[in-house]
Amino acid sequence: MNAASPPEVLRAPLVVEFPFTRSLGPVQSAFLTGLRERVVLGVKTSDGSVMVPPVEYDPATAEELRELVQVAPTGTVTTFAWNGHPRPNQPLGTPFAWVLVRLDGAGTALLHALDAPGPDAVRTGMRVRIRWAAERTGSITDISCFEPCEPDEPDEPDEPADGPGTGTTTATPHDGVFAEPVTGITAPARLDYTYSPGRAQTAYLGALAEHRTVGERCPSCHKVYVPPRGACPTCGVATTDRVEAGPRGTVTTFCIVNIKAAHTANLDIEVPYVYAHIALDGADLALHGRIGGIPYDQVRMGLRVEPVWTEGGRYPDHYRPTGEPDAEYDTYKELL
Image (tube, rainbow, N blue to C red; front, side, top):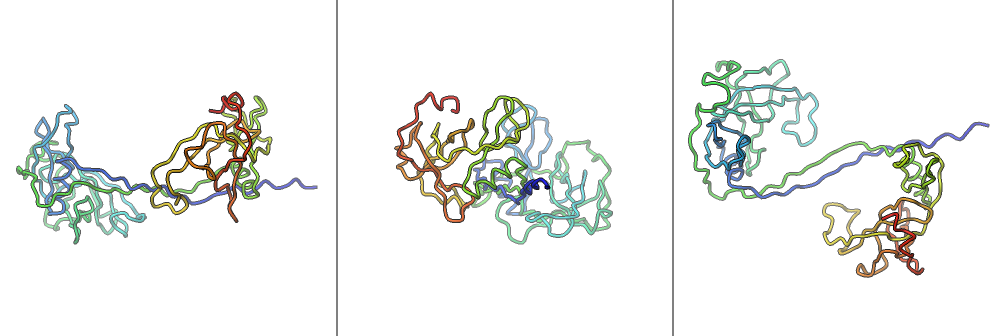
């Protein structure tokens, strides 16, 4: 008789996305507002060099920087990398080069995209210029990309004539004052990846789909871990002995959530609500879950709860009180 085949290890595409909103100080505000007006600003440091993009504090002395200068929209490629497979939301939809460009008048390089027909058309020292976006709002994307300068403009040598990093050529003072300055930005951060939970959690998720909670026991210390991790975090040995825990458990600790989750359809829950660590009966590790069926201000440590499943749900929607007396502190204190 053949042994049963192990379950297929799960894989799923996941996205972590967070729109980061920040206010701007006077230097960053002037820089981004300047881009909207097709003006590139840098800032002078204590040694007289010009940093583009500008920073608010000197990287060497930490002193505050406010002396703004305007640099040219043309510059020199200092290094590059070819991107043959652009990803969504990158500057160009066709293959392009990521380049560091030292704009004329700057002592540092700016990272952006270079529109070029192929990797052989890109080289260190080549002369490039900014291609401005047709619609500009006050962000780094106001620079649509860089493009090669006219063919008759020669490449620069590896070091400018006035020495490395001085940034004195074509840098002119600027007061940084514009009408309707940009005072804040929202920068979307996004990570796309494929997640595989591994052998232990694949079995755990498969059992949840059957409304069962399955953990694994350490062969050395005999603790039962739910959710299983595939190895005991205490003993460092593999865990393979599966044990069914719960379904009931005890609230060990909890927090009251007062901020509504945004842009997440499956977390459209009215606030405030309670998220808790729950020690399932027979488990030696608390898992987390939402508490429902009780006013948020009546949730307490020691509260006995049970899972509530929605139709077709692959995991408990929330946990509700069982009506049992609260558990004694000594029964769950090791799981806090």
